[in-house]
Image 1 (cartoon, rainbow, N blue to C red):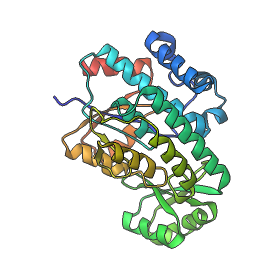
Image 2 (cartoon, helix red, strand yellow; image 1 turned 45 degrees about the horizontal axis):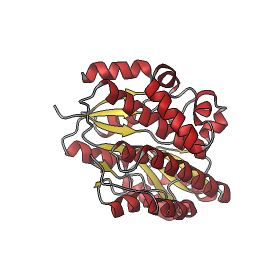
Image 3 (cartoon, one colour; image 1 turned 30 degrees about the vertical axis):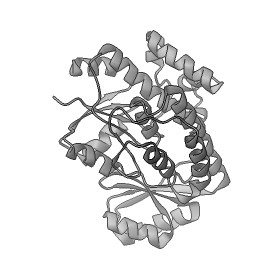
Image 4 (cartoon, rainbow, N blue to C red; image 1 turned 180 degrees about the vertical axis):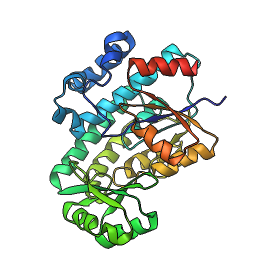
Length: 308
C-alpha cells in the first residue's frame, strides 16, 4: 500500500497547550523544543503551553509554534514507525515551510528561523497597512474572481469547494462583503484577522523574506513537496525559493494541491497540527480520501496503531 502523504497546518490552527503532552512525555520532543527555544532566543514553548492567547495568535509567534508542533509530531511518528516514509508533503500557507523541512529541503533550525522571520515580516506589514479578509461560503469561482476584480481585492485562499477567502484593504473588503450576494455568493463573513494575508498588502514582507531565502541553504526535497502558489511539486532550488516567496502575496491553491496529490494516486493523508482543520478541507475536496489527524499523545498512538 502507498505510504500516506503528510499535510501540515497553517496559521489559525494554533491553540494553547499545543505539543505540551508530547514535550512532557518524550525526550526527543523535549530536545527539539529546547533547540527551538535556544535558536529563537526566547521560550516559544512557554507561549505554546501558557499563552496568553494574544501572544500565541501573534503572527510572529504562531508561525514558529505551528512549525515546531508539526515537526515534533512527524519526528515522534518516525521514531515509533522506523519504516514510515511519507510519499509526499504539503502544507497550508505557513505549513508549506513545515512540509519542506519534513522533506529535508532545509534544516530544522534554518526552517524555524525562516518561519520566525516570515511571521515577523508579515506582522510588520499588517501594522503598516489597514488590511482585512473575508470568507465566502458558496458561489462559483468565476463569480468570486469577478467580485475580486470589481472591488480591487485579492483571492487569498482557495481552501475547499465553496470556501474561498478574499484579502485586501479593510475598505475594499467591506465593499466585497456588501456586494457578495449580487455575485451569487451565499454568505460573506469578515474575518477577525490582523491584516490582509496573501494579498498585495504583504509585498514588503515578501521582499524581506526573499532576501532571507536567498541566504538559506536549500537542497532537493527527498519527497515531492506541493507548492501553494503553483499547486505542483517543486524540486529545484530556484523554484523552491520562488514559490515560497510568491506565496506571501499569492493565492493558496489548496483545492488544486490536494487534487494534484489525489490524481497522483494518493488517497491516504496524515494531518499534523492542532485541531482537524485540514481533515475538514480534504473531506470537501476529495471525499474518497482518508485523513489521520495527529495533534497530541492519544491521536499519535491511534495513528501508530492504524499505520502499523
